[in-house]
Length: 357
Ligand SMILES: [Zn+2]
Image (cartoon, rainbow, N blue to C red; front, side, top):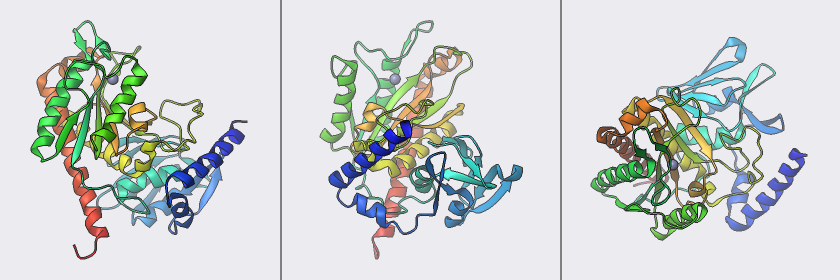
């Protein structure tokens, strides 16, 4: 029943894409280099070894084909059957679909191969639109005003205060890199009365500010297991036709809809991976992974966008670190470094695509 509904949603969504994004549907049909797909558990998959070989990666199987390492001088991808949890250069990344073993060969979901792995392995590969040069960056300090966000009452910490402080630090660093930096809020306020309107107002500022990059800053919390759960996780928008990280029931009836932010799936993945890697390197925090979610601010963003959860306030040990200016400065330094690297990769692609420059 769900599969039938999904197919119908897919047809409608393809029609919508074809109508609203000129050339997109035609480009999808014409893509020449797409590897052969097989249907597994009702989804399109590609042979992981063949995918790696296309990028010149050396393929090393282990555990009777259940594990596969794809590696070259620059990248090392570690894959294992029946999980979404993979490592790219030691960094934890969650796929949208679990890897599957079929006829003794490991397979990766087609959407994961195209929209998550490809941009990290070879930015700009395929028929993806290259965003313009980064000039304006919008930083979004999560929560504010009557919405304190997550709290650690034992230590007297509010997420809204910590995100604003981190945003100011990041603004200073990115301004020094030459960018025009705008904040969704520069003081302790909400942008609208209701939570939904507040998030919409933040996303609307992306277009208003003509932002080329959107960075939403948050600190995390869990209800149970607070003493065990710590670390950093980074979110980008879930690609169309996939399910979000936490949606184990695969119950999201909106999965077939192409959101505004899905125009940037390729660059979202590269940005998210780069930000996550730099945060882990800078903070030495535990790795909760690069994840995907249909979060309002990401869904509505008109430019590549990322949402950072830079540590758990519910974990007293980590919360004490977050409470120090040094930790928040490091969060800002890591993100600023990731932006520098991301921008350099973008310009690299631009030079490749502009012969003679
Ligand atoms: Zn938050």
